[in-house]
Length: 145
Image (cartoon, rainbow, N blue to C red; front, side, top):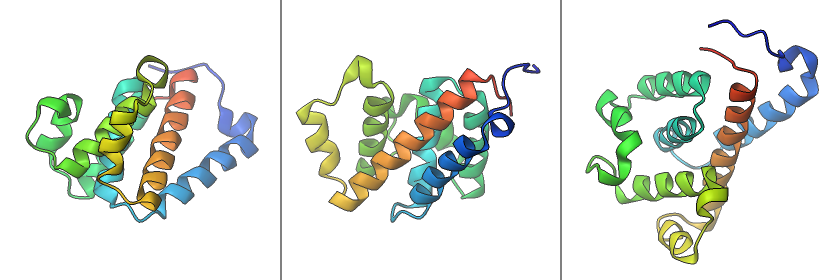
């Protein structure tokens, strides 16, 4: 499917550069790459961003994530394939990506904060915020893999 929507890279290079700045900040975090890629795949599923889902699924495979676990990300709550730390990150991803529907109840915050130190929790939140922002550009402008 070819899109005739705005090419925001060309239309607003400073916007694209700002997004790249967010990307660089979260990539340099202390969080392991595999966890960041799982979070990006999950947020992209929730937001329906074909481009980001394709890109981060591929990146996760390159980072030696298993296809089995990638397929299970959509049902992570019912899957035994994820560690408690990964489950906490995916829970945080769901709540922050669906903020208007779910909010962030205190019990969820405590559960997630129990798996990450303060710096890691801030970095995880930036990772989720960044992929959600990319998803919005991808979906709004019908970007394709």
